[in-house]
Image (tube, rainbow, N blue to C red; front, top):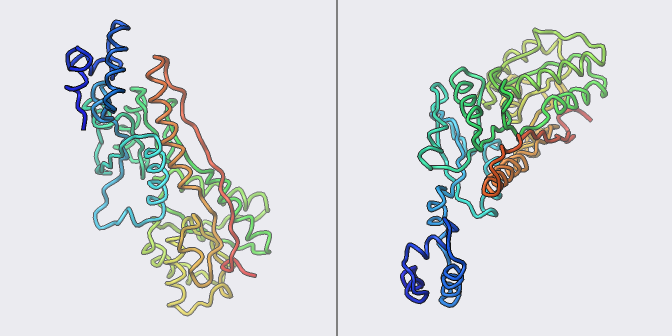
Length: 343
């Protein structure tokens, strides 16, 4: 395989000059540049992409930062696997590397140091929440105007870059579906409140009830943590309230599957005794019994869009020193009707 030394010898220049020409660094006589380029072409020499990135002060990596949660298999969850799939597709198409990093959700994570040490050129933050430590870290990242994007979590900062789904509308559509079928007593099993998408789902639930003239019963609003275990745990509370419920809207499929399992163990017949609508449209949603009516969220497309936006920012930084435009994208959801919400 041809190396830089051979190119330098054929062009009659130093290896350093070859490096400068091929990396586009510094002033150079046009005649010298042309000799180097002609020699490289004649010898079929291709510049190593990683070496090129380092020469430009770039790592060649887009970083993805995830929370480290002991005993939780993040990569097996539909939410993370779909987002990572979309990110990976964009990164591969853009000729970049993908670096996975883990943070302690309870501590302030130094995102800025990732850029200072040239570990990443841009980063995407997954599984973020509104706890104080994470808010502090993301605000600092935004203040520095570095290329980054937060997935599906809002922060109160004017320079926030975010790609999210329209969870308020998705939840509204789910609850409206139940109301239109004649069910007025609708409970809600939500995720943890430190996530902005939990608050968005609650807002959509409330808006649908309000528009239909249905009074919200706070006793029928239950809290889980988006895990199947928390859904199964909530089954006892829901079973206790069956006489006051026609249906339950659940904030994700995992909790809904756990809830259905727990209710069946308590002797419920679904959907006869209780109608259920879930959220995400994960792979498992169509295989439950009964199959889940659920809100489809375009997680894969969200991940791909976030990575594409960041790679464009990086390309534009080579052309201009102007601040990059903010990333503010909200993707639509879609209600998928199956048997769990009744015939």
